[in-house]
Image 1 (cartoon, rainbow, N blue to C red):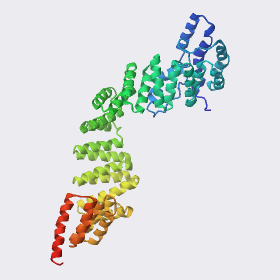
Image 2: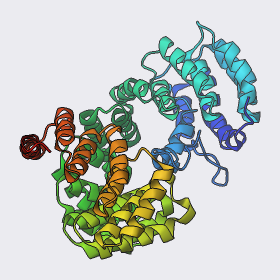
Image 3: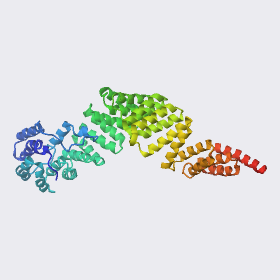
Image 4: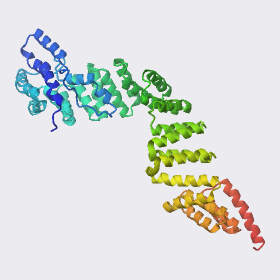
Length: 495
């Protein structure tokens, strides 16, 4: 058994005095006295102000932490130890004596010590209040499995037991059993226990089950009770996004950003909405705002670079990419290298070189092996484009030593050797490339080009026909037809 939570020794005892004893003696007192006792219980739900107040708290990084750990929500959970006798199961005179003389002193001393007595009292024919109170003690001490069992037992005896229904729902949520929590949350509302937290948790549970329409409806109900609750508003936004209602999501985020301009998650969420709406310029504005706030993550900076690249703003893209790689070292190198490849393809060699150098200096030893090989290939392509063939082939051969199955590198190396007149080396690289899945057709065509240069037209025709069988292309077909003509002429001349 876990070590008791400090609250079980402080605030809990105050609730026992305020609520449980009151109910235990109700059966023999006049109605006016009962009313006074109920009022006293309602006014004494909170423990002393100096006492620690928690109830199976959520970890701070949990999406429900803000809702669950809210002091008002905790107060209500703590208040569930009292009794609402007008709507709930009663204690018989004998049960009142048991509660007052045996269980209450144990609860007052240490609630966990009351578990054996409550377990013994919670017999099949006994009041559901014993099962409920036992479940509450277990719930607060984070014994969620047994708490859920005892709340269910209480409801089996008294199906309209509102607080048992509500605490069962809350315990299921706390245990991460969201699909199971939906029914008791809805039942709580139908029994008259609706409030912002009930509907908010119902929205969260529906969201986790991908029930977007139901989640939206529940969060909107929650906002009727707590119109300024940011988590509930974000729940509506996320439901809008899941339902592809991007205009509504963007409009609501506009409203939230006016209230909370320093919330980086709102800027990022709206940027994603703008991307879905195919408005990269507006998405870039949001990410730039995050950058100026100093809160943009490396991934967001790389995304900003992608957005600028899509708008042909190469210099802005380069700046964002370099900043993104610097912030995340080698973990984000792949995204930046992909951008550099695009720049090389567009002939922007200077910008591509600056980006590659930024990756190398920022990532250093953290550069993952796959990205390191990708960088070698990219540097070779840039060197070829700049006319530095010797430098390029050195990078490619280094790459091929580490990964001899890189088809693209084999083709690039073959191209270099063919340009410098080393047909034998070129042919070897092309033959190796043709053995790699995805590069068969291109490797065969390249081999045919070597044979054409050597005027071996018959061999070239055979290779081109194999290439067409592997991957038919109109350009290769036209080339094959021309080579076939050369082969016929060659045979006709007897050479």
